[in-house]
Structures are given as C-alpha cells and as structure tokens.
Length: 279
Image (cartoon, rainbow, N blue to C red; front, side, top):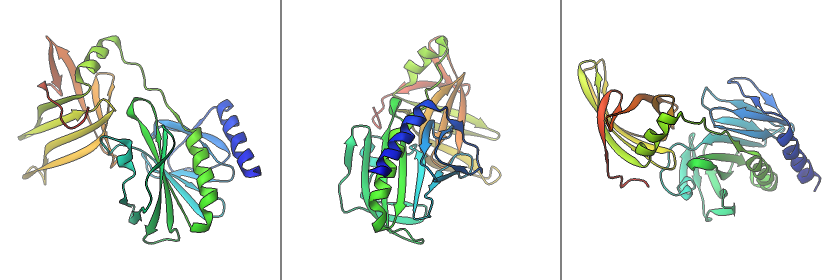
C-alpha cells in the first residue's frame, strides 16, 4: 500500500514538474520526469530507478535500484495493423527468446500487456510487455524483465510508468501542407530516385495510423550491385519533406510538393494507388 501511494505521488508530481529532456549517454536517477524526443513522449522515472538512452534513438533503459528488474522503452515503428500484433505469442528481443502461454490482456483500451517466459543469457527469466497506445496511431512498448519473485513489483512499476507517459504533440503543419497530408495519408505510391549511375525504384505505403512500409531497390557495393529491401517504420510530414523513420534507427527523407494537382516525391512524379496493405 505504501509503495502504491508513493508511485501515485510520483505521478501527481510528474504532472506539475516540467520534463527534463533526456540526453544520450547521461544517467538519470528518479524520481523525475523525463522528456524523450526519440520516443516522442515524456514519462516519470520511478524513485531510485536509473535511466539511460542507448545510442541516439534508444531504447531507453530503466534499471531498478537493486538490479533485479530492467525496463526497455521503445517507440513502435515496425508493426502494421492491430496493436495486438505488438504482443505475439513468441518473439526475439536483443538475443532473448520470449514465449507466452497466456493471452494478451488489457487494463484499458490504451494499455495492453502480456506475460512471457524468457530464454537466453542473463539473470531474467520472465518478461512483461506493455503497449501504451497514444494519439495518431502512435505507441510505446515497454519490455520489463525480472525473475519470478519480482512479478508484483515489476507489474506495479510498469503500470505506473505506463500511466505517466504523455505523448508529445506533433507540430502543426503549414496551411499549404495540410492539403498534401490529406492527399497522401492512407495512400500507396510508386516513384523513382536517381542514385548516381542508377535509377532506383521506391514503393511506399503511408498508413493512416502513422506507420509506413517501404519497398525499394538500393544500390550497394560501390554501385556494382542492387538489392530490393522491405523496411517498416513510421512517417510524418516535416516542413516540406516526407520523413520516414525505421525501426533500426535509420531514416529517409524526401522533398514533397503538389504542383498542378500532381504529387512529387523527391522531385519524381508519383500517383496514388489502391492501398491493400493498411487502412
């Protein structure tokens, strides 16, 4: 009861105190509210827990005071369709094999979770995976690792962290880009990019949820060969550009404009095609 009261107090304080923008490589100690640009959100770091961003884009790693529990937080940028696809029966996560004999559950419509058994290196044998759904199809996934005796504490901590998450409002688009946004959202497009010696084909699906699927021909090995790759991520408009961010931390950016009722991606003319992949 005391632990739960302290957690609720932390959440109350988090609503008053402005979030400190998290910097890569720096270690933070709770309780404090952190703004995490790579997640597009802010969250409350529980008392005595440490937090550190791995690399520039994450994951954000939260470590319990005694080292008995660890939470990794990532923005979802790899799944199209139902949020339940983020909670599969089995998955591989950073070299760990996760298996679940139970079904996904929901604390409410915006907070889903599933309990897993963990196999792999390290001391943790259980995992709780929470999906926190936000506006405009955004989501943050919390991967909590622990030993069986730490279940109750980890569950309460993850609920508290999930409750504290606030999604950063997306920047409003200029008036002339609103029309382009309406034109491309939910669409399927094909266009071509000039890459030195070669012309490379791009095919992109821009889901209404904000998720994206890109199939492209890419020049590799000093322009001696080309490969077709399929990449999943998220999309948004930024100034005069279409920004695609992928789950591996990479990104692509294309100039975008509407001229004489014709769309151009990266200077190449494109047309909207039927989208049977999403939306």
